[in-house]
Amino acid sequence: MARATSTPPVIEGFTPVRLIGVGGYADVFLYEQQMPHRQVAVKVLIADLLSGDSQRKQFTAEANLMAKVSTHPYIVSVFQAAIATDRRPYIVMEFYPGDNYLDRVRRERFGVGDALRTGIHIASAVETAHRAGILHRDIKPANILTSEYGRPGLTDFGIAAPDDQGGDENEGLSIPWAPPEAFGNDRLDERADVYSLAATVYHLLAGRSPFEIPGGSNSPLDLMSRIERAPVPGLGRPDVPASLERLLAAAMAKDPAHRPKSAAEFARQLQAVEGELKLAVTQLELADESRAVRTLDDEQAEDATRIRGVTTVDAQVAAPGVIAGVPERPTGVAPAPVRRREGMLAEPEVAATMARPKQAATPDDVEPGEAPRKRWMLMGAIAASIVVAVGSLVTLGGSGGSGVSSAGTDPIVVNDGFDDSPSVITPSEVSGLVGVDGGDGYEFSWSAPSDATGVRYQVSESEAGKQSIVMTTTYVSSNRCITVVAVRGDRSSLPVSGCAS
Image 1 (tube, rainbow, N blue to C red):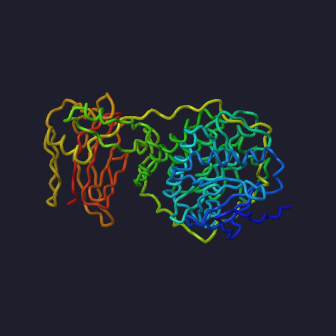
Image 2: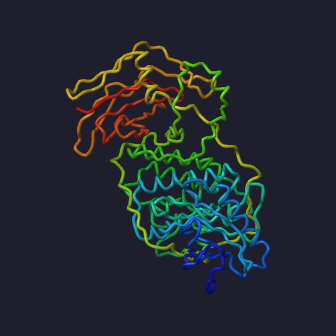
Image 3: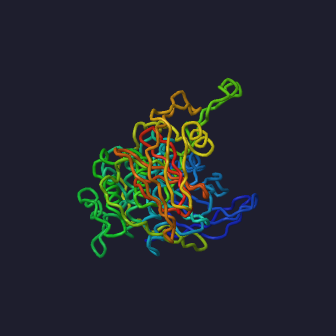
């Protein structure tokens, strides 16, 4: 039997508007904050649980954990937390007026590109939480909200825990998106969240959770049995490439050791699928841990003629080997439009699919964030200066002529100004760059080197300032001119530019 909803507490400086969400142990209200004036969502612990010390601690922990990571662009921000005059704890959060993703997927069909982009955005939020020592443990479509600008926001850290604390019998899990190890006494680690991430992306594409059988029996016991024993069902969508099917199946492997080891690794493999489909590669939003604090003395002591590299987001590099052997497919399906409505829907009914294991714990420690890799060079003014110093760059013009020449064959070593290790620039591995007007865009192609193993291509669109990573030797651009750089490991080739005829 559903419980009665609570009334909004009196909070100084805030005016209650309406109830916008109902959860297992808290209600969410829309308030008007007076200073600064804005709408906020206020999550309030229900009065029936005030006497329960564990629920109060869990509520306080949620506020602290969310505040620790809420500066991330895809995690719902926490503004403050306190205790109301009626003794109920509350958390003041950013208000997301759009549908949560469970409601969205019930109303619309997600395109492959939209699902990939959402997966990368939420993976970057989860990776940020992991680097802060936090496991979410309840990633699912209903816990992804939609902002007024259409961006997703991960919320509900109610059963999350820091990595140095274990769970208790009061913690729950959402069975349809939970990994098999969550049903026993196994200690959970980051790969449990990776499983739930993959299950969420699967849900966006299939319109249902991975082991739900339409029209069949989907009781908690049925779902748990399939999650523990059955293989991941196929999506049954012809527009989903085989590489994405394989990636989701691997990320939902029964054995955690067979999954991607981190949310960041899972995101990079999603980026590789974007590259395969010739979609713009979605940026992985992570804090730049490679930037060291530099003093004025450090700057003055450096060689004044040092060439400084341009910092780019290394996470945009597609993970090699993910799409090996997969034939090229047509361009991806356009992202589904975001549907919005006023107010945030109530928490979906999940009581029938909730299980509370006797023990659910986080790992003893969390692996440190991945060591920063070398930044790519040869963009903007730096690329131009190297080309002038090394050889000539012949740009394709309207006449249809083409050709690129580089002086010398030995690698060029340039200190990038960020560490003591040099970046290696090889003679160009891109040749025969040509482009034609295809009507819907300019279609470019080029020749790969004789040994193309491990080579990927960074494509820059000069007018839009846009960069993409592709694994093929073709690219469709909305701009007439592009620049292509071949990247092999930590070696970048000289850039080759061309304009469509």
